[in-house]
Amino acid sequence: MPYSRQTADKSGHAEFVRNPDVQAFLKQCTYLREPSDSEAGNIVASYSPAPAGQPARLPEFVVASDASKSDSPIGDKLPSTQFGFIKVSHVLIVMAKYQELIDPKSRFVDPFKVAEMHRNAQPITFVLPGSNIKYHNAPTVRDGFRKAVYDQLAANRRTGANRIVLSETLLMLNDNQLPIANCPSVTCKKEIGHLVFTVQQPTHPCPHCGKTVYVTDWLRLHEGISDFGDNASAMTRMMNAVEHLLLGAFMLEMLQGNPMALTKVAFVMDGPLALFGEPAKLHPRIMKLMHQVNEKLARLGQEPLLVIGLQKTGIVMDHGRLMQRFLEKAYPRQGVLRVIDDTYRNDYITGSDDPAENFGHESYYGQDFLFKTETGRIFNFALPYPFAAKDGSRADFAARKVELARYGSLLERACDLIRYFELDLYSDAIVPVALAHRHASISLEPGGRVLDLMAREGLR
Figure 1 (tube, one colour):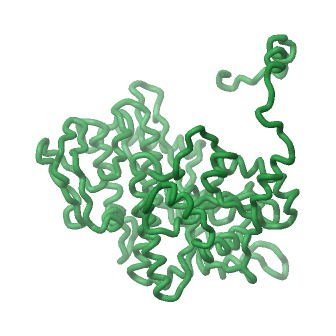
Figure 2 (figure 1 turned 90 degrees about the horizontal axis):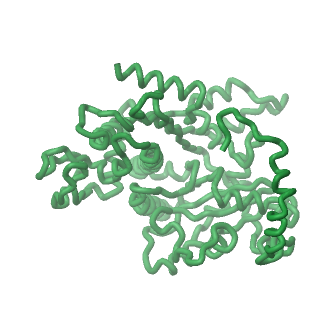
């Protein structure tokens, strides 16, 4: 590995070229299967025309979300000291106003209307203690982190009459009663008889050690926290959980207050429809809520809610970019689609001698698709599974989740929205996610440095 700012020698490859052992090694190697365009042709043949509305079936509003974090140590002294800064941004795009951005006479974008659209971004910030930080004089970093998670999620995140309290959202997703079996304090961990938490009683004292147990301990985010270790992964889990809890909060609010409004909105999330690590057990609750929403809309004679998870990176996108030129050659100026079933994923993307019976069974609540647009861009998007739960055997669910007929109009509407918002500025990006990322991102320079300085001053 090079030192900081050290560049590589441009002739570094020469040692491999001249080395006879390298040449001898290569001569002992043969292809398992000879690479050829016919191999790509077999894969390309499994793609099908992407559905398209005539005219495009677009929502009236698009809500896009993205999140970012900064969790590097705030100084170079030991022991390493760390805070977690998390920012989640939601951008509301009113389609009628978006269509007015370009003056039809001049074809120039109106900067004042663009500025108004940026004002519709609503960032929400969270701050958490990391290594070597005691919050509220807790005896350990983990106990302080638990308290901080509760304080952050129990805070009302909206001014005005309508509240957004994510700890209450967590309870509503669990039918307003949430049990915890063991004390989460690192010095106790004893069974506590499944203490039940409600909106009226979101905390309990542990019957053994007397420390406070919080409803948010159910997420188990604190389990990745140590006193002096790198706690970046716990911050990532927190960011992931908050993003999905906010999505749940928006859907619950609209479902209870004005379900018909859900027919006019599309939600676009940056990343897969999945939760990973300790809070992954939240994913079936989100899946169940989406199914309840769609059942309500069906009773009202409406189409299902459009929720899209859009991935900019990852192994599926890497595979899609590898396939891009073959797809464009086989289907020039034509949109094509491929559902990423478990067989396709294992054969061409991940590969495994012992593949799981149902990919993402413990974490995913949405199905992946690869979509090449008419302009040749590649998108990896996901739609929520059209089920209330992952019933039956894993193999049975793996077969049912890729039956395209179950997704109804959602595939056509998702493709129409992606086509409409294709963006030239970034590779394989759409406007709503790019806007959300702009307002959610924390730059390394100067943003990250400013947060470090602020954290150090706050400790004095």
